[in-house]
Image (cartoon, rainbow, N blue to C red; front, side):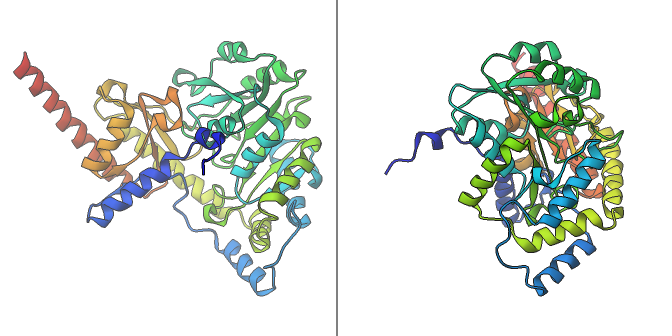
Length: 399
């Protein structure tokens, strides 16, 4: 039996591959500092866990509506309306098991071979993977460090064509921590407002922002019915393993996404949805405390990265990733990431795990304790200093 040709186009997430390798080293007795996986290192808040326990006891263990529990969809619509400054109702909300189904279902419903999708690069690798799986054409637009990891807008506009069917935006962004400005979003909206184009706005890190609340392109005039808002509970409420996310969709897309849910998952687990209602309606102090701690770690860790030989790192405005420029070290990204894992015991990701324009960078997740972050910086410093000295010695001998 042969797999379909589409399976040859599908990608994966390097973070999980690196995690497996790191666990193997730990099984051999190695001490590894994990800065590779993108998930909060905080426990799910108590009131959310208690809501799930209550839901289990009350029998919320059976099939629910494919689109999601009405009470949860109402809570999501209220939250989105308040935080994005727009007016949406529960009919637009589809609850799914995690954020990825919104990416996959939207593309399956909209993309045909020959369609083009503009997306940021470096970025979440599942974007490109799903574009290719659907048979559409990926059109990467580089994120520029000198613009705070935003687009060169002239280059972005040059990529728009009659075949552009979808544009993907991610703000705050993985892996860079960059945030798109309201001005840039307004400019992009002006270019696509009258085109037959849908925007997939990945806002999964919307609550993890340090300077100001990020803007949504859905709030731009004429864009609500052209925008898919992707958000969820994994990052904000430390619920990665609960697998619950949602999309706020243009009305024409809701039925299609529901059909894909029926054909794949039937519904999202009811007791997790009850917990999600508690997440949105309950005490937000744990979220605020988590973000404050991420800010503290960000400031210290990035300051330390900027003292390492050959390394510079912009201060991320959101998410919990430091995207460090390592071009002056003389190392290629994948080689340095591998060496840091195998020789220094620091697990991180090559920038190329997020696309071709990630070369010259490493992504570090600072969702780890401050002590571990400081130790990781110390290990990286020793490794770079030792290997720089080796290179100098080699040049002296050969010279």
